[in-house]
Image (cartoon, rainbow, N blue to C red; front, side, top):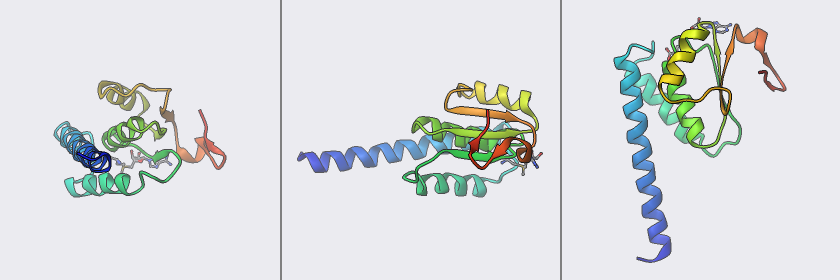
Amino acid sequence: MPGTVRAKVHHNLARIADSARMARTARQVLDERLTYLSVGKLRQLENAMAMTKRVPGGVLECGVALGGSAVLLGRYAAARGRTFDGRSDLFGLVQGTLERYGLELDGDVRLHKGLFEETLHPAGPSR
Ligand SMILES: C[S@@+](CC[C@H](N)C(=O)[O-])C[C@H]1O[C@@H](n2cnc3c(N)ncnc32)[C@H](O)[C@@H]1O
């Protein structure tokens, strides 16, 4: 198989695997009642992440509630060496959830305690 065809096949397989993985995570957070979002909204979130994958910069969620969408966004960002910053008013609970889903906090994935208007600065997420 010529190199360019092989590269395209590889790229498409990686995309399919990626999308299956994300859909599985979305189902898991729904089953665990970790999100207020509907299946449709989670799907929109996945599409938005896919559409913006070449946009430089990190991912920021203001108000993570129980952490369902944060799991999705954090996993997606971490898999691509991007940062994820979540703003949480339920810090301890969401911290436990993210860790349970295999996200290591304080590397590329960070959770900030408190209201985002108090912790978010135009220069970038504060630690
Ligand atoms: C609609 S919920 C987010 C739903 C979440 N994306 C999910 O997967 O279920 C909005 C969250 O933002 C939080 N919130 C509202 N105002 C906030 C603020 N100023 N700073 C931080 N969190 C805030 C609320 O407490 C709530 O947890």
